[in-house]
Image (cartoon, rainbow, N blue to C red; front, side, top):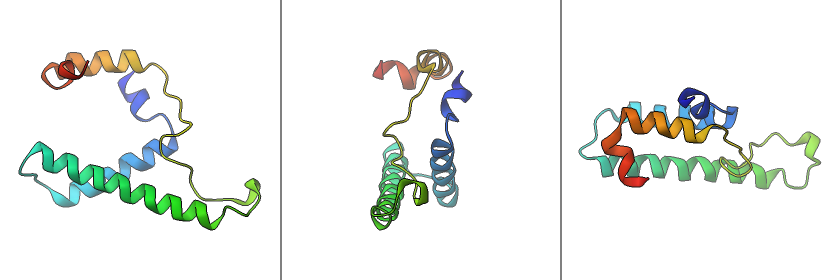
Length: 99
Protein backbone atom coordinates (compact mmCIF):
# COMPACT_ATOMS: atom_id res chain seq x y z
CA UNK A 1 0.00 0.00 0.00
CA UNK A 2 2.74 2.43 0.91
CA UNK A 3 4.54 2.10 -2.42
CA UNK A 4 1.24 2.44 -4.27
CA UNK A 5 0.44 5.68 -2.43
CA UNK A 6 3.91 7.16 -2.91
CA UNK A 7 4.04 6.40 -6.62
CA UNK A 8 0.43 7.21 -7.44
CA UNK A 9 0.78 9.53 -10.41
CA UNK A 10 3.34 10.69 -12.92
CA UNK A 11 3.25 14.11 -11.30
CA UNK A 12 4.18 12.67 -7.93
CA UNK A 13 6.84 10.45 -9.51
CA UNK A 14 8.30 13.51 -11.22
CA UNK A 15 8.38 15.41 -7.93
CA UNK A 16 10.00 12.45 -6.12
CA UNK A 17 12.66 12.22 -8.84
CA UNK A 18 13.45 15.93 -8.60
CA UNK A 19 13.62 15.79 -4.78
CA UNK A 20 15.90 12.73 -4.89
CA UNK A 21 18.15 14.58 -7.30
CA UNK A 22 18.38 17.60 -4.99
CA UNK A 23 19.06 15.55 -1.86
CA UNK A 24 21.51 13.20 -3.61
CA UNK A 25 23.64 16.12 -4.81
CA UNK A 26 23.81 17.47 -1.26
CA UNK A 27 24.83 14.18 0.33
CA UNK A 28 24.80 14.88 4.08
CA UNK A 29 22.80 17.29 6.18
CA UNK A 30 23.86 18.82 9.49
CA UNK A 31 20.34 18.40 10.90
CA UNK A 32 16.81 17.30 10.04
CA UNK A 33 15.79 20.95 9.79
CA UNK A 34 18.42 21.51 7.08
CA UNK A 35 17.06 18.59 5.04
CA UNK A 36 13.47 19.80 5.40
CA UNK A 37 14.47 23.33 4.41
CA UNK A 38 16.30 22.09 1.30
CA UNK A 39 13.32 19.97 0.23
CA UNK A 40 10.87 22.81 0.90
CA UNK A 41 12.93 25.23 -1.19
CA UNK A 42 13.18 22.64 -3.96
CA UNK A 43 9.39 22.18 -3.96
CA UNK A 44 8.88 25.96 -4.15
CA UNK A 45 11.34 26.16 -7.06
CA UNK A 46 9.66 23.29 -8.91
CA UNK A 47 6.21 24.85 -8.48
CA UNK A 48 7.51 28.26 -9.63
CA UNK A 49 8.82 26.68 -12.84
CA UNK A 50 5.51 24.91 -13.45
CA UNK A 51 3.59 28.14 -12.79
CA UNK A 52 5.70 30.00 -15.37
CA UNK A 53 5.04 27.25 -17.93
CA UNK A 54 1.28 27.36 -17.24
CA UNK A 55 1.28 31.15 -17.50
CA UNK A 56 2.89 31.03 -20.95
CA UNK A 57 0.20 28.64 -22.21
CA UNK A 58 -2.86 30.15 -20.53
CA UNK A 59 -4.32 31.52 -23.80
CA UNK A 60 -3.94 28.22 -25.68
CA UNK A 61 -6.80 25.73 -25.95
CA UNK A 62 -6.56 22.88 -23.41
CA UNK A 63 -5.76 20.35 -26.14
CA UNK A 64 -2.56 22.22 -27.07
CA UNK A 65 -1.23 22.91 -23.57
CA UNK A 66 1.82 20.93 -22.50
CA UNK A 67 2.63 22.54 -19.14
CA UNK A 68 2.22 20.34 -16.07
CA UNK A 69 -0.51 21.11 -13.60
CA UNK A 70 -0.03 22.00 -9.98
CA UNK A 71 1.77 19.33 -8.01
CA UNK A 72 -0.92 18.56 -5.47
CA UNK A 73 -4.14 20.24 -6.56
CA UNK A 74 -6.60 17.80 -8.04
CA UNK A 75 -4.61 14.69 -7.13
CA UNK A 76 -6.57 11.91 -5.47
CA UNK A 77 -4.72 9.53 -3.18
CA UNK A 78 -6.41 6.27 -2.32
CA UNK A 79 -5.52 3.84 0.48
CA UNK A 80 -3.79 6.60 2.44
CA UNK A 81 -4.87 5.17 5.82
CA UNK A 82 -3.25 1.79 5.09
CA UNK A 83 -0.05 3.48 3.92
CA UNK A 84 0.03 5.68 7.02
CA UNK A 85 -0.40 2.59 9.20
CA UNK A 86 2.60 0.98 7.48
CA UNK A 87 4.67 4.12 8.02
CA UNK A 88 3.65 4.24 11.69
CA UNK A 89 4.69 0.59 12.14
CA UNK A 90 8.04 1.11 10.39
CA UNK A 91 8.89 4.52 11.92
CA UNK A 92 6.84 4.89 15.12
CA UNK A 93 9.05 7.59 16.67
CA UNK A 94 8.70 9.77 13.57
CA UNK A 95 5.05 9.28 12.67
CA UNK A 96 3.12 8.88 15.96
CA UNK A 97 3.76 12.45 17.25
CA UNK A 98 1.93 13.81 14.18
CA UNK A 99 -1.09 11.50 14.36
